[in-house]
Image (cartoon, rainbow, N blue to C red; front, side, top):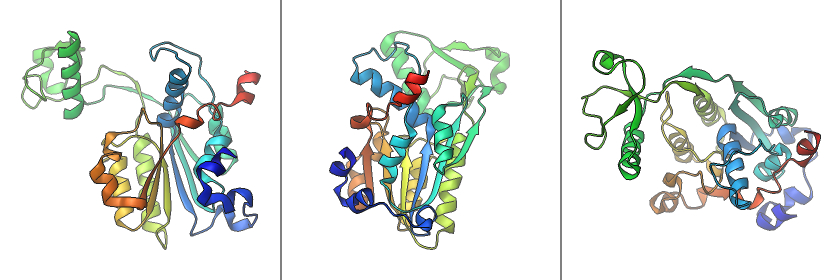
Length: 278
Protein backbone atom coordinates (compact mmCIF):
# COMPACT_ATOMS: atom_id res chain seq x y z
CA UNK A 1 0.00 0.00 0.00
CA UNK A 2 2.89 2.35 0.71
CA UNK A 3 4.31 1.72 -2.77
CA UNK A 4 0.92 2.30 -4.37
CA UNK A 5 0.75 5.66 -2.63
CA UNK A 6 4.24 6.64 -3.72
CA UNK A 7 3.96 5.32 -7.29
CA UNK A 8 0.38 5.94 -8.23
CA UNK A 9 1.28 5.90 -11.93
CA UNK A 10 2.03 2.17 -11.57
CA UNK A 11 -1.19 1.39 -9.75
CA UNK A 12 -2.60 -0.62 -12.66
CA UNK A 13 0.30 -3.05 -12.34
CA UNK A 14 0.39 -3.11 -8.55
CA UNK A 15 -3.30 -3.81 -7.96
CA UNK A 16 -3.80 -6.12 -10.96
CA UNK A 17 -0.42 -7.69 -11.74
CA UNK A 18 -0.08 -9.41 -15.08
CA UNK A 19 -0.54 -13.17 -15.00
CA UNK A 20 0.58 -13.82 -18.58
CA UNK A 21 3.51 -16.17 -19.08
CA UNK A 22 5.28 -13.36 -20.94
CA UNK A 23 5.29 -11.09 -17.88
CA UNK A 24 8.87 -12.06 -17.05
CA UNK A 25 10.23 -12.10 -20.60
CA UNK A 26 8.41 -9.22 -22.23
CA UNK A 27 10.70 -7.74 -24.93
CA UNK A 28 9.31 -4.30 -24.10
CA UNK A 29 9.59 -4.80 -20.35
CA UNK A 30 11.97 -3.10 -17.95
CA UNK A 31 15.63 -4.09 -17.54
CA UNK A 32 16.84 -4.35 -13.92
CA UNK A 33 20.44 -4.17 -12.71
CA UNK A 34 21.42 -4.46 -9.03
CA UNK A 35 24.81 -3.48 -7.61
CA UNK A 36 24.41 -5.67 -4.53
CA UNK A 37 27.33 -4.35 -2.47
CA UNK A 38 26.32 -0.73 -2.92
CA UNK A 39 22.69 -1.40 -1.98
CA UNK A 40 23.39 -3.71 0.97
CA UNK A 41 26.12 -1.56 2.53
CA UNK A 42 23.85 1.47 2.17
CA UNK A 43 21.08 -0.53 3.85
CA UNK A 44 23.21 -1.13 6.96
CA UNK A 45 24.27 2.53 7.07
CA UNK A 46 20.66 3.70 6.78
CA UNK A 47 19.53 1.40 9.59
CA UNK A 48 22.22 2.87 11.84
CA UNK A 49 21.16 6.39 10.92
CA UNK A 50 17.44 5.81 11.44
CA UNK A 51 18.07 4.14 14.82
CA UNK A 52 20.56 6.70 16.10
CA UNK A 53 23.54 4.31 16.04
CA UNK A 54 26.98 5.81 15.46
CA UNK A 55 28.17 5.12 11.88
CA UNK A 56 31.41 3.51 13.13
CA UNK A 57 29.66 1.22 15.61
CA UNK A 58 29.74 -2.44 14.63
CA UNK A 59 26.38 -4.14 14.46
CA UNK A 60 25.44 -7.64 13.27
CA UNK A 61 24.65 -7.98 9.59
CA UNK A 62 20.97 -7.29 9.01
CA UNK A 63 19.35 -9.21 6.18
CA UNK A 64 17.71 -7.21 3.44
CA UNK A 65 14.39 -8.52 2.16
CA UNK A 66 14.95 -9.01 -1.54
CA UNK A 67 11.23 -9.61 -2.03
CA UNK A 68 10.63 -6.09 -0.76
CA UNK A 69 13.43 -4.60 -2.83
CA UNK A 70 12.23 -6.36 -5.98
CA UNK A 71 8.67 -5.13 -5.44
CA UNK A 72 9.93 -1.56 -5.01
CA UNK A 73 12.13 -1.73 -8.11
CA UNK A 74 9.79 -3.66 -10.38
CA UNK A 75 6.40 -2.51 -9.09
CA UNK A 76 4.98 -5.55 -10.90
CA UNK A 77 5.67 -4.06 -14.30
CA UNK A 78 6.47 -6.43 -17.19
CA UNK A 79 10.14 -7.38 -17.10
CA UNK A 80 12.59 -8.13 -19.90
CA UNK A 81 15.73 -8.82 -17.88
CA UNK A 82 16.93 -9.10 -14.27
CA UNK A 83 20.62 -8.95 -13.31
CA UNK A 84 22.29 -8.90 -9.86
CA UNK A 85 26.05 -8.77 -9.33
CA UNK A 86 27.78 -8.96 -5.97
CA UNK A 87 30.61 -10.59 -4.07
CA UNK A 88 31.19 -12.96 -1.20
CA UNK A 89 30.31 -13.53 1.59
CA UNK A 90 27.07 -15.09 0.42
CA UNK A 91 23.90 -13.40 1.66
CA UNK A 92 20.38 -14.87 1.99
CA UNK A 93 19.17 -12.16 -0.39
CA UNK A 94 21.21 -13.73 -3.19
CA UNK A 95 19.21 -16.96 -2.92
CA UNK A 96 15.94 -15.04 -2.98
CA UNK A 97 17.06 -12.98 -5.96
CA UNK A 98 17.84 -16.14 -7.90
CA UNK A 99 14.53 -17.70 -6.86
CA UNK A 100 12.53 -14.75 -8.24
CA UNK A 101 14.32 -14.77 -11.58
CA UNK A 102 17.46 -12.66 -11.25
CA UNK A 103 20.61 -13.76 -13.03
CA UNK A 104 23.09 -13.68 -10.14
CA UNK A 105 26.82 -13.24 -10.61
CA UNK A 106 28.55 -13.55 -7.21
CA UNK A 107 32.32 -13.15 -7.34
CA UNK A 108 35.01 -14.05 -4.82
CA UNK A 109 36.93 -11.12 -3.35
CA UNK A 110 40.64 -10.88 -4.19
CA UNK A 111 43.61 -9.75 -2.11
CA UNK A 112 45.28 -6.86 -3.87
CA UNK A 113 46.35 -3.25 -3.68
CA UNK A 114 44.07 -1.06 -5.78
CA UNK A 115 45.52 1.90 -7.64
CA UNK A 116 44.06 5.19 -6.46
CA UNK A 117 42.56 7.71 -8.85
CA UNK A 118 43.61 11.35 -8.79
CA UNK A 119 40.26 12.18 -7.21
CA UNK A 120 40.81 9.64 -4.42
CA UNK A 121 44.34 10.93 -3.77
CA UNK A 122 43.05 14.49 -3.63
CA UNK A 123 40.42 13.69 -1.00
CA UNK A 124 42.84 11.60 1.06
CA UNK A 125 45.35 14.44 1.05
CA UNK A 126 42.59 16.85 2.04
CA UNK A 127 41.52 14.60 4.94
CA UNK A 128 45.15 14.14 6.01
CA UNK A 129 45.66 17.89 6.22
CA UNK A 130 42.33 18.40 7.98
CA UNK A 131 42.79 15.71 10.62
CA UNK A 132 46.58 15.76 10.89
CA UNK A 133 47.08 12.10 10.08
CA UNK A 134 49.53 10.41 7.68
CA UNK A 135 48.48 9.12 4.30
CA UNK A 136 48.53 5.34 4.00
CA UNK A 137 49.37 4.61 0.38
CA UNK A 138 51.70 2.23 -1.41
CA UNK A 139 53.89 3.54 -4.25
CA UNK A 140 53.80 1.52 -7.46
CA UNK A 141 56.48 -0.92 -8.60
CA UNK A 142 58.54 1.79 -10.26
CA UNK A 143 59.07 3.45 -6.89
CA UNK A 144 60.02 0.41 -4.80
CA UNK A 145 63.70 1.41 -4.68
CA UNK A 146 62.89 4.81 -3.25
CA UNK A 147 59.97 3.96 -1.03
CA UNK A 148 60.04 0.22 -0.38
CA UNK A 149 57.23 -2.22 -1.14
CA UNK A 150 55.13 -1.88 2.00
CA UNK A 151 52.55 0.81 2.86
CA UNK A 152 54.21 4.10 3.70
CA UNK A 153 53.18 7.39 5.19
CA UNK A 154 53.29 9.63 2.16
CA UNK A 155 53.65 13.39 2.68
CA UNK A 156 51.33 15.60 0.72
CA UNK A 157 52.89 17.65 -2.07
CA UNK A 158 50.53 19.43 -4.42
CA UNK A 159 46.94 18.71 -5.27
CA UNK A 160 47.01 15.27 -6.85
CA UNK A 161 50.34 13.66 -6.10
CA UNK A 162 52.96 12.87 -3.51
CA UNK A 163 55.86 14.59 -5.24
CA UNK A 164 56.99 11.41 -7.00
CA UNK A 165 56.15 12.45 -10.57
CA UNK A 166 53.88 10.00 -12.37
CA UNK A 167 54.38 7.19 -9.86
CA UNK A 168 51.04 5.45 -9.27
CA UNK A 169 49.83 5.18 -5.69
CA UNK A 170 47.87 2.26 -4.26
CA UNK A 171 45.76 1.38 -1.25
CA UNK A 172 47.45 -1.04 1.14
CA UNK A 173 46.60 -4.61 0.03
CA UNK A 174 43.32 -6.01 1.35
CA UNK A 175 40.39 -8.18 0.28
CA UNK A 176 38.39 -6.22 -2.28
CA UNK A 177 35.88 -6.69 -5.05
CA UNK A 178 37.23 -7.01 -8.56
CA UNK A 179 35.19 -7.02 -11.74
CA UNK A 180 31.80 -6.65 -10.03
CA UNK A 181 30.95 -3.22 -11.41
CA UNK A 182 32.44 -4.09 -14.79
CA UNK A 183 30.14 -7.10 -15.20
CA UNK A 184 27.11 -4.92 -14.52
CA UNK A 185 28.40 -2.35 -17.00
CA UNK A 186 28.74 -5.06 -19.64
CA UNK A 187 25.23 -6.37 -18.94
CA UNK A 188 23.81 -2.85 -19.24
CA UNK A 189 25.54 -2.38 -22.58
CA UNK A 190 24.17 -5.74 -23.77
CA UNK A 191 20.64 -4.48 -23.12
CA UNK A 192 21.31 -1.20 -24.90
CA UNK A 193 22.70 -3.02 -27.94
CA UNK A 194 20.43 -6.06 -28.08
CA UNK A 195 16.99 -4.63 -27.23
CA UNK A 196 14.91 -4.00 -30.33
CA UNK A 197 13.47 -0.83 -28.81
CA UNK A 198 14.57 1.44 -25.94
CA UNK A 199 12.81 0.61 -22.69
CA UNK A 200 13.25 1.53 -19.02
CA UNK A 201 16.50 0.69 -17.26
CA UNK A 202 16.24 0.33 -13.47
CA UNK A 203 19.67 0.60 -11.87
CA UNK A 204 20.14 0.01 -8.14
CA UNK A 205 23.35 1.79 -7.13
CA UNK A 206 24.56 5.20 -6.04
CA UNK A 207 27.96 4.82 -7.66
CA UNK A 208 29.03 7.11 -10.50
CA UNK A 209 32.82 6.88 -10.30
CA UNK A 210 35.00 5.21 -12.87
CA UNK A 211 35.67 1.53 -12.14
CA UNK A 212 39.03 -0.18 -12.33
CA UNK A 213 38.44 -1.41 -15.89
CA UNK A 214 35.50 0.69 -17.01
CA UNK A 215 34.42 4.36 -17.14
CA UNK A 216 31.71 3.64 -14.56
CA UNK A 217 27.95 3.50 -14.03
CA UNK A 218 27.19 7.08 -14.99
CA UNK A 219 28.89 6.55 -18.35
CA UNK A 220 26.58 3.58 -18.96
CA UNK A 221 23.54 5.57 -17.85
CA UNK A 222 24.53 8.33 -20.24
CA UNK A 223 24.79 5.84 -23.11
CA UNK A 224 21.33 4.49 -22.33
CA UNK A 225 19.79 7.96 -22.16
CA UNK A 226 21.43 8.97 -25.43
CA UNK A 227 19.90 5.88 -27.06
CA UNK A 228 16.38 6.86 -25.97
CA UNK A 229 16.06 4.80 -22.78
CA UNK A 230 14.43 5.98 -19.60
CA UNK A 231 16.51 5.38 -16.46
CA UNK A 232 15.38 4.93 -12.86
CA UNK A 233 18.21 5.14 -10.35
CA UNK A 234 17.46 3.34 -7.08
CA UNK A 235 19.74 4.53 -4.27
CA UNK A 236 20.22 5.57 -0.65
CA UNK A 237 20.48 9.34 -0.23
CA UNK A 238 23.69 9.04 1.81
CA UNK A 239 25.48 6.96 -0.80
CA UNK A 240 24.35 8.53 -4.07
CA UNK A 241 26.99 10.38 -6.06
CA UNK A 242 26.41 14.11 -6.45
CA UNK A 243 26.98 13.64 -10.19
CA UNK A 244 23.43 12.25 -10.43
CA UNK A 245 21.84 15.10 -8.50
CA UNK A 246 23.53 18.09 -10.13
CA UNK A 247 21.01 20.48 -11.64
CA UNK A 248 22.74 20.47 -15.01
CA UNK A 249 22.33 16.69 -15.21
CA UNK A 250 18.73 16.54 -14.00
CA UNK A 251 17.69 19.47 -16.20
CA UNK A 252 19.32 17.89 -19.23
CA UNK A 253 17.31 14.67 -18.99
CA UNK A 254 14.07 15.80 -17.36
CA UNK A 255 11.61 12.95 -16.87
CA UNK A 256 13.86 10.54 -18.79
CA UNK A 257 15.96 10.20 -15.63
CA UNK A 258 14.42 9.57 -12.23
CA UNK A 259 15.96 9.02 -8.80
CA UNK A 260 14.09 6.83 -6.30
CA UNK A 261 15.49 6.95 -2.77
CA UNK A 262 15.29 3.87 -0.59
CA UNK A 263 15.58 5.72 2.74
CA UNK A 264 11.89 5.73 3.63
CA UNK A 265 11.68 1.97 3.03
CA UNK A 266 14.60 0.87 5.24
CA UNK A 267 12.44 -0.69 7.95
CA UNK A 268 10.18 -2.40 5.41
CA UNK A 269 13.25 -3.82 3.69
CA UNK A 270 14.43 -5.54 6.88
CA UNK A 271 13.97 -9.29 6.41
CA UNK A 272 12.34 -10.25 9.69
CA UNK A 273 11.96 -13.93 8.69
CA UNK A 274 15.72 -14.26 8.22
CA UNK A 275 16.35 -12.33 11.44
CA UNK A 276 14.05 -14.57 13.48
CA UNK A 277 15.43 -17.78 11.99
CA UNK A 278 18.99 -16.60 12.70
